[in-house]
Length: 80
Image (cartoon, rainbow, N blue to C red; front, side, top):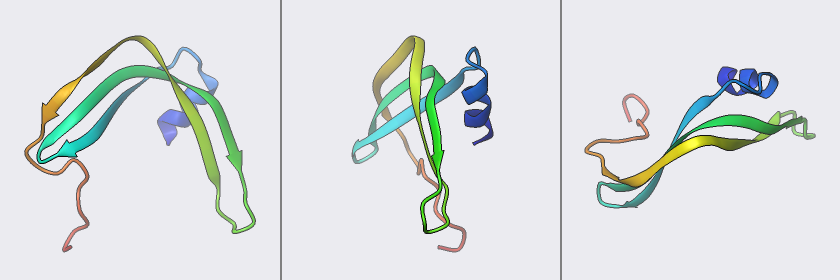
């Protein structure tokens, strides 16, 4: 979140993004790019939670393809 907050005020600040879309088995569709934060907003609903939304705008070139991952991308909780 610190990187997103920094990107909201510094428009020349970029962050690196990787998006893995699960295709089944150990295969993922991968998209990676450098982006800047746009349209950042916060709201405070009645349930006392903070809701944050933002867009990531790609800058420059991006990479796409398929990859095979042996292992978990999203770690499980300890002792689970």
